[in-house]
Length: 568
Image (cartoon, rainbow, N blue to C red):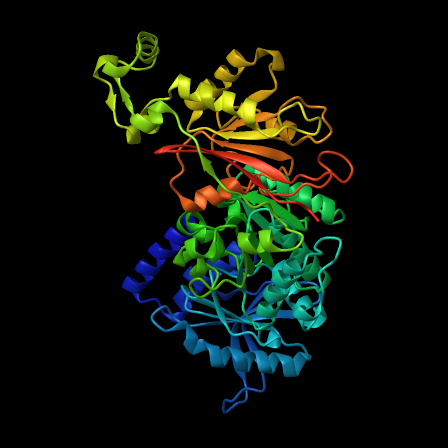
């Protein structure tokens, strides 16, 4: 963070210089206010927006008067929006809290309106909105004028109790989804500002998030919302969901080109894109930040986003509670393994009727994966094939644990494709393979799998099976083609490298093929979630999706399984 580094350097310099209160104001606080778009006059000069050393009465002093270091106001109405009490750098900023509150009391008695409160030593900035009954909190910077005005609007117009409102039934209608929203809103009513929702993949985390957004907007608890996700295709999927359920709320992707757009309601961004431009927004710009797929990488790589924005923050994840890392619970202010709300895969499949498909796994394997690859034991044809793939083929002597990690064996991949086409679940017409994801190890392996498919099954046309990875410039369009429900697209098999492991919502999927080793329990459940979604009427009126097939290739072998459950 450039601003953070600059602030640290300034703090070190100030400590060495031992800034006085006046120097602290001129050299630090003035700049911080200017960074939030306030027009600050140099060396104490008054402006229409920022007054300095403003007299106020009703103070516990011999004269009954005091002088507010900064008054932030509306330049037209002259209404005082906030006051700032400054202390010199060597003092604890919290020593200014009581004095700032007395100043706010004085302004309220003189104007009939209570301002918002800041107190700072130039490095630590504390914000207090005691009209809401909230405790003070440390911020990264000051609110802009627009953000202060909305904060005061909320003081006067927002619903007093968020938890008393019900979410819109057209958005969420399942009891556990409603309970998730109730848990979050009740937590916010208790003056908590962060929450963590854990829901099994396929149980509607995005819908819960959208219903929460609608409720908070309706209650005047939120004006602008930031929805964060891992990848562009998930951002598009979220945008489509917001468009479906909240069609009247303006929305925009956050990119370098749109980072100056201040007229939207819903802002959708990938984490990497937001990291490049988040400081273009003031710290109070968003009222609610929703973090999709909250896991360890968010804490490690993107935690500055959550430190910067002073907003209600909700994390969403499908990772089972026992595998969520402590720092994720800490980020969302929850006790370890005690999220705000938790709905498990087991609860979803045991519900009557079920919300997800259960599954079981039956093992199948190949000779190479059982025994390894040893050059001396290969047939002449196999030796020729190996020589095409690796140098010094005569020295190959792989134990079974090393096969999957080192060699993309074409025979094994042929068996994977053949097994899928022979035993995979069929689509609505009963003859054609149902929609399938093959999870490949990397780009080269994905290319080989697609090549082998067309070697074995050229009759299906050139768009039946496609590779989707970061090397494909039209990956997002291919995902859309794969999602198509009306049969207008031929694409049936998606060979994916990481891009479809999580988040992709295609209830029509009937087969998952794990053509790569998966050692992470968390990753495995995220990937299995691509197939667990139910799909009513998939095979015709009243004929629902009742099973999906999952084949898994681990380092120790190849496993194939069918899972099923009826819809009632």
